[in-house]
Image (tube, rainbow, N blue to C red; front, side, top):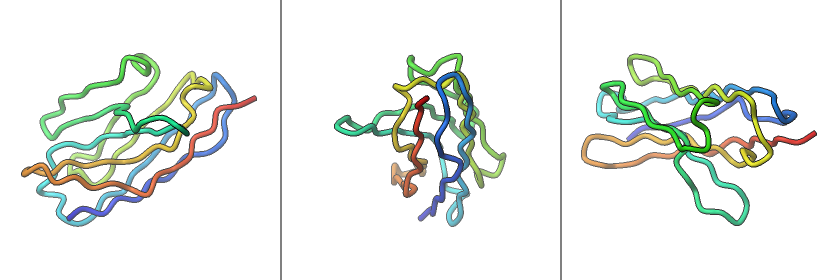
Length: 116
């Protein structure tokens, strides 16, 4: 199993930036993909960005060109650089890993608020 702890959320004005971090521990050797999801009140949880062990990345259309996902080589940490934030980006952001064998683990979430 993999344990995940997010940090870096907070309040930012529209147009501002935040960097989320996720520290991973446990069965790191078995991680296939790491990603960020978000969930706004009343909405379903959605994929924001994901990167795999072979460095394939994908982004939600709504964040392309504004957000950048990156990770440590040993899968020990995941980051999300968020630029030009918009009010619609406000949500609880969750770190996620998918292991070989498809087992998934989640962090506890970190709140991102975008407001003037």
